[in-house]
Length: 345
Image 1 (spheres, rainbow, N blue to C red):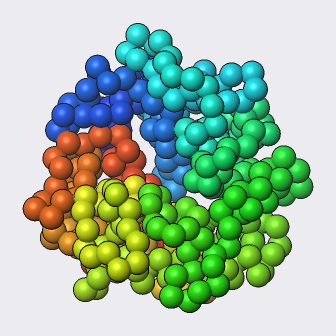
Image 2: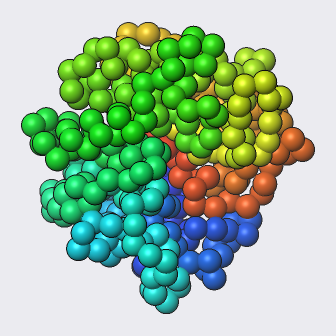
Image 3: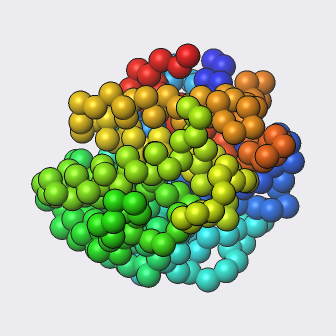
């Protein structure tokens, strides 16, 4: 069997025949913490994106394809008949917690929609689309869950632009997010930045594109430019910390997490495909170099030996544990670099 691409090396190490382990102690999976849909759905997402940007596997070298099937089975098994999702599962395969429409529901739809739209395996794409349809009629009271779900709907609309279920989900997500305050000093639709912030303007950009609404697209681009200004300091990214950030609070602030950078790379990569502004490519480059040391602590979070990514950036350095969320954030960002042919200095 050929050696797997180093970009996915640690993802393979964190996975088994059931799913993707959420946590790691340094590079070793913490099996006792089990799995969660939040991360497995993210894994499904990056593997589907990788199918577009990576060469097909050599004959007999199907580890990543096998992994995508395992992740898809895990996500499908997390749905109930109404399309709600249960997030957690232990090492024995026993699910715990209730079914609902929290972030895991939104991320499941994002991963499923991306697989349906981008997988080069027609059977896997059809299975993902069926699972997407099962959950896409649900709605969440949480704006970020709606945002994640809407990004999955935007993927489905790439192939099926008249799909009314996806169009309805996208419209409802825009309503849940809002289009900002109109105040140029704080155009954000919420009083504070919290987590995965760039997903909100990305939904407006995606909806504007998919629904043919130039005003909405413009609103999303304005919000995204503002967020980039807020999250840039001394020529590098200084992203919102885990506790969030509001007007007048000190910067830089910690702990900073890779998911923030990956969300920014996602949104800027989408903007780059829709506009001729080179700024978006530059921000994707800044996201990639954040992982390699262009950040507030001046340390690399990417580990070229393991292929993983450290879990957070503190004022004193990094959290050396290399869990699923952080590693997937790094992989997602580097896939955008490859697709956009961004040159990393």
